[in-house]
Length: 122
Length: 108
Image (cartoon, each protein chain N blue to C red):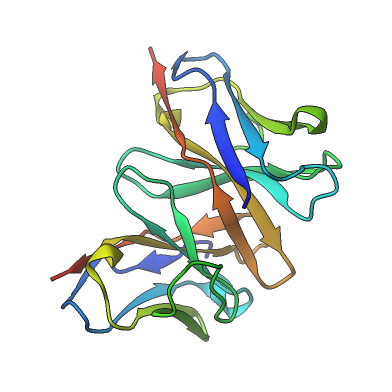
């Protein structure tokens, strides 16, 4: 069973960069069929997909966030990371990392981390 | 449209059957996946594809799709099924993955 855990600052100042890392356990990122994804949940609201990266460092981003997001992967540490630039209060959310699979018609997020709350302060 | 619309809330008597729906144009091209989320917890995948369940998900959860609507059915709802349920699919443009607005299921 793949285990994921998010880590990073819980408080970020407005206009700065939000940086989070997801550590994967009991499964190797290298050579995996999974895509490694980030999703966030705004307070009291629904879920928003941020993007994903594969072990070849190919990335795919939500067009609405693409100008501010970058994902990276460090297979030697079995980790992948999220950077979100120029944050505002609207980026305050619980951020989840998750595994993602897709085959052309069928897409799903199979394993999820526990989530980490990031608050953007002014 | 890139939206997936769900009813905000439904209730079901203990042991009865409830169906949650998710509507959107993208569902004509892509299957929905369904997630259960309890307060303070991460979402959990319960159904994906035509009608597949991950290991450990009870057989009372099932999924179906017709035209632009996907459905999640809980047959014989249990108290522990009380939660928010979200659908997800690739959007119609193929550029993103969108979640539904969520349905709160109350088991009476």
